[in-house]
Image (cartoon, rainbow, N blue to C red; front, side):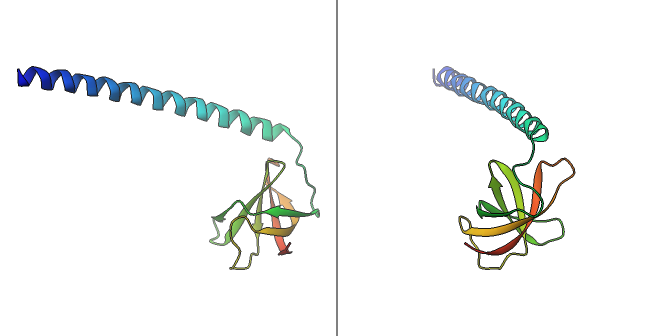
Length: 118
């Protein structure tokens, strides 16, 4: 009797696990498709900034450039801007002034330099 109950319980747990796993795979696929669609839209959109523009932005997060330098990640109307030449005491959500220096090859992001705290 105990063996049959264990098999039934194991079967129920197995069904829940498989349904959870299928849900994860499906949601991951839909998330990837949504991300790809946003990327295509960004490639077709004109950047909301021009080289030389000075803007006030909030720091969303920090990242490390492939050169090893710390950069702030900011957004202007959803457009990603990587800010370099940062003082070490800045934190996420700090408001700063920047100047746009360049765009990446596809004009889907820009690089800027830090000017001052706002």
